[in-house]
Image 1 (cartoon, rainbow, N blue to C red):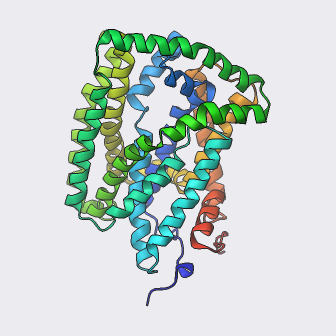
Image 2: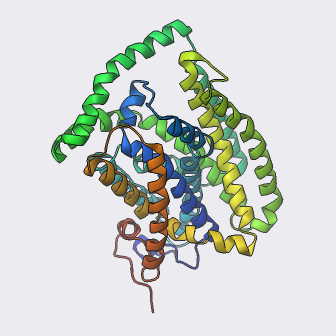
Image 3: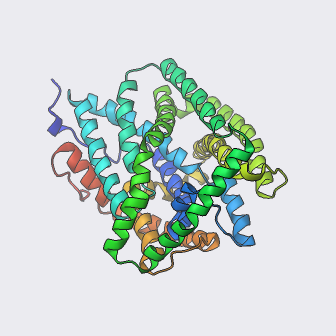
Length: 407
């Protein structure tokens, strides 16, 4: 007879799949680069009112590099890994308790609480709440065959293409008028945001954020759920196929994914570059074109990055080089929140909030992430989980989990 839910336990260190931890750590590195400009400036307000950031020539070049190599790629990888982790969790829980659906639901509720608190009290760029809500839909796919999941992915792909096409419907003149109107309305909003972030008290900051950031983010949750679910399903398909558990049997498939994703990424990346340097000029629609290409290249390049890491890990030298990423990956939740605390603390807490300085953000990222590697390494020498992972697991399983490693 299967044990009751309280007797189930988290995955042990020995049961972990190291490649997943390495890829997860690598994804957090990229996410830090993506988030740094958002910590520095009222990017959300500018996006809501379709206002382009004012960047120096050097930052414009760096922005182009980030768009080509980083933007939309690493959140996609993180979402992919959520789908993989879902199946591993469910499969293991099912072997230990008949209440595995309840256990998984409790896990998501705790993650949603983390996400809601993160969104409300720290930063609008939270992904945890959307992940938790989208995660409930994964339950319907746990027992589905790979072919069924592929059919759903095809349907999602068609819907995504349709949504991207909708943004270009209508006459150019009418779109231009709408954008100009939004930008004029947004100018005082941006000034207000900078003033509150620089000069407001903590409670004024919270009040401002709730009305101007938290509410718009919550209204966009349905779209975030669909986007996340798409990548969750790809991750679910990959783990069901056995790619991470029996890599040697799937090496040729991964090699094909590597080549196809590289070839698909090249034209999209070139298109982003040509739009940035105005060789392609769609006028008022330029930014929308870039965003569309970012979404598509985010998908193709994420597959390229994942497959590259999997292939490199076949070599002992690269496995040794990439191994430190696994320390960060094993403490992904804790390190994700730490990145927020560092970013918000630096730019809001020290009154540096204003225009984005991409070069500065990149330098800070190259300092913060290695520190996270070192701190995660020393923490995991003594403890089984990161501190927030411990809270998450203890709440999920309904009892305090053993924290210290046995000596």
